[in-house]
Amino acid sequence: MPILRWLYRHVFNSVPFGIAILVLIAMYVAVGSGFVGLRERLEMDEMLFFNWWPLKLLAVLLIVNLSTVTVSRIPLTAPRYGVWTIHMGIILLVLSLSAYYARKVEGYLPLAKGQTASDFYDRWERSLYVRTQFSTSRGTTLAGLPRFHEYDEPFGNAAKLDRPSLRNLSPMMTVIEQNTGQRQRVSLGEALTLAG
Image (cartoon, rainbow, N blue to C red; front, side, top):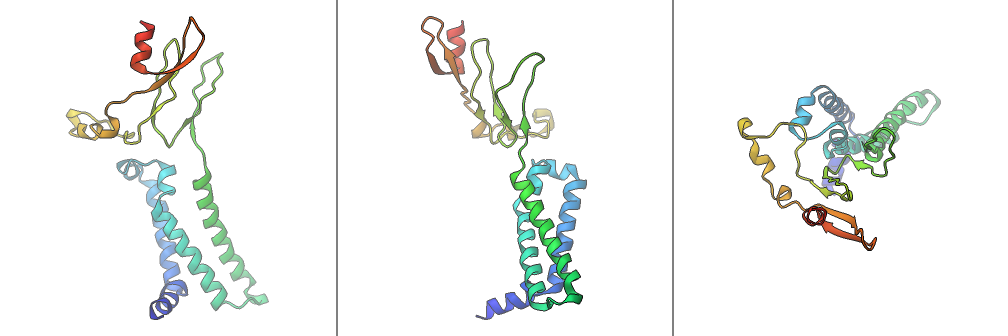
């Protein structure tokens, strides 16, 4: 097939293409590390930016290109062991970067002095948690909640907070009835009515 032959010759087995991919990865990392404002405009932090699909695509292209060029152009002989080692080192570095950001876990664990905590707040899911004297909510996920800028009428961007995913929020809570000791799932409004 002519398209596969062209891809092999000009993409997968091309040294200039591999160098271009390396430069693009370096630029992506430099921009993501150095321009925090850009990440914030995209509503991303470091974790999201470096686990985003463009970097994954560049990483896959580099690994395929570097593997193909190494196997097809560089003979595995004693004088070339260094080149093979460098290429495999680059591939290992890119795979490690991808695995690190794909498997890294971050979150928040609120700790009060003299207390214990049993809840871990996952950093990927911004949620509304409500605590009353009777119970704690399980959380209502707010996937559309922006996190980096101030949003209000004076800033001209209040509409960002008027999204369907941020309307009609109804956190559910587990309440223990005082008379029976039974656990019951109720909405926040019902829990506040029961408390009053």
